[in-house]
Image 1 (cartoon, helix red, strand yellow):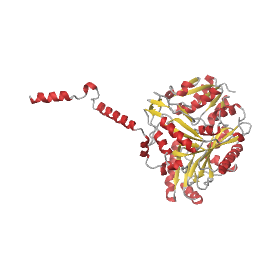
Image 2 (cartoon, rainbow, N blue to C red; image 1 turned 90 degrees about the vertical axis):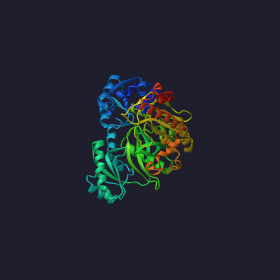
Image 3 (tube, one colour; image 1 turned 135 degrees about the vertical axis):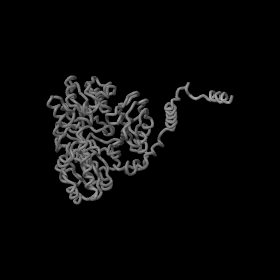
Image 4 (cartoon, rainbow, N blue to C red; image 1 turned 180 degrees about the vertical axis):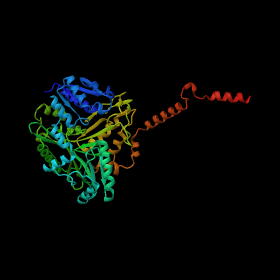
Length: 498
């Protein structure tokens, strides 16, 4: 087994990998930027190496500095976590060239599934259903109009290098095509340096369902059932659950079998996720993309299957076969994850800053993956997610009740968080009956200001006191000995009267 692993990441996922390493008896090596000197993953790792200034491209995306940290520390393998270099073909290939193991799939698989058009064609060959759309790239708006007439409106214009909703436009009719085509290209060029786009039919009543797969280097592949990730704001997931309340048992089995078949077709090993658009009315599902890495929401799969996905990744990277077979995988109970972000719950704008108080919820069947602690300053340079709160229950109703209770116990002051948003979602009838779709926040959620009913009244009293204090301070009359004295005023009035 590896003796030392470097984690090329930060935040809660770096801590997750450090903990897996410790339980396996492996030394962990953290890397950190200038902004992360006091981050918890630096404190808890066995060793830590500075890799550059705060901007990601100069530190966590700096391949030369990461490789140098590997050599300086003597790390034999790298776990990339998610984001940053986790799906970077060049990084995986560079490690291979340097004789360092990459804890993830082969560079060839990352490259094959990284390009959405290549991935779609590969999946079609493997017999995986895909959304009807263009056969390949669509070079002009005029070509887009021709494809749309064949596919039928509404359509989605999507950037081939896109992600997180960037470079994507929904078009309902022909008169909207030209403007949307140009906007998608411009956005894709700005975010990804690549303005190539393609077209897919827009699925009505869409749900985001994904299947977790796992393969080893001996050719074994299993699936660990599905996760539903339809609660999203600005195309980014914020609540996930497993199993999905909308997927029937026979469809669930079919999705799992197809995903295993597809993973075997491309010789996949390590953790991977097939993402599907699921029509909640017709129960049809279509391949969207494959993520060739560990997902943010992997804890809910761990909670319902009992499989430690990070340990499994490390074992597979070392050359060991999977420790479980398909017949060992059973979904037990229900798990829900809420992503806790340092952001305004109404506008979704990031709100980094100093954490004054931090108390994580506890109690039975609650898991918290977090890097927050009191007096820690959340940097502005990275993703605003600071914790993941996961609840398990024998039933979906019990999991929701536990998550609600845990959100009540979660204390984070000094910054704004989306905890009130989560409370509001869990209280919504469409979430409770499971009929929500990926359009939930935009179409069904209603007035975001309504979520303030979940705030403690004392918060408003404290806010009023702070506001009054700041008012005095601005007027320069906040010092005790400088406050206006009514006794002095009375005396001055008497003196003036003679």
